[in-house]
Length: 69
Image (cartoon, rainbow, N blue to C red; front, side, top):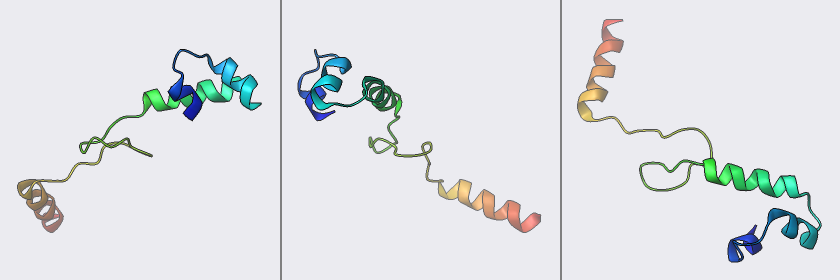
């Protein structure tokens, strides 16, 4: 993958032959990297979605709803 990053014009099949790996594995990894989303800090999420921090008003509303339940 590092070699492909340095040579973006090369095909996955070329890298697969050079490094003796399955070309579909390389293409799948490239697809997953393109589909990853960035969180609010600009960092790529490893798993799951973008968790947000509640404002104080939202947090208080959660506490109030728990007290009335």
